[in-house]
Length: 443
Image (cartoon, rainbow, N blue to C red):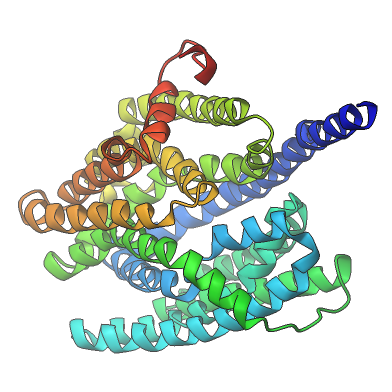
């Protein structure tokens, strides 16, 4: 009996006394984003002013177009890899070497499909060349396996160090290029260089501080199982990338590059908020997941607390942004981008649903409901494309913002109410909107 109590206490201690690791991880991630937001915001603003609305629109069209194919490069394996590294740390070498091989193949395939697609749907030679160059970043996504390892171990400080060194170097080069009045194509090459040097940095830091060598074990059975588990997530990620980026691509195809520039200026300010739920949830969920097998009620209530905090922060950000949208756009981008102010008022509301979506994605994986994720995102992506076709010709960039908001709200919140398997998650999300400290055990 004594041993049983001791084992239970040890198990509980292992799960619940890891708050310092989570907080430390969040601090490192916030430090990373603070540097990026501070320096990156200044340079990004300067960059947008330097390019002007039309050139800035071309730049963002290229980024958005390639990003849609990023899901094919990663195969939606992010959550699966983190889950397996958390649950079976002894299989680290097998997981890393097997998935790295798969991602190198999928990244190369994604690059080829990216090139073929742009040559079919776009007649602009400049855009074809720029997308062919930037598409090389799809191959570098294979190194994300190292990032996932550090995430699973709640050791993001290593990633932060590498990415910030690279960021400072790239930012310095970008400033020099602006001062030298460099053309757009060189900025695209710089973005490619950044992804590859980051990849090499992550690999170096892994060998330096974690393991001097990786036992190259290609486990076909594991690859088959991981791919099977990730297929619904991959299909869902395709849908996510569509309704996150298709608005810019469709704006470019329907109205032209200037509309993309107006929309992208607002989008970049709005998406600054997305960093906060991403950091908090990626740091907190590994710990929350460990509590699932011990106390399901506590597991659910921890999710509610995290979402409640994110909702509170998002409402404050939405309110401030809506009140001062014109002043923010004029201060950041200048008169040329004034049309972005109304777009920002609408698009900033998507931040309220992003945290719900990120947490929901983790919840689905933890409950082995990946297939439902696919249906949720497929409907959301289809809804987004349909609304864009109807609203962009009528309302321009504002129509794209409305389409994105409705799609995000449906996919990340409303959809969960329609299935018995996900209604528990819908209830969790709903409770997170209430100020009162409502918990699962109280309902």
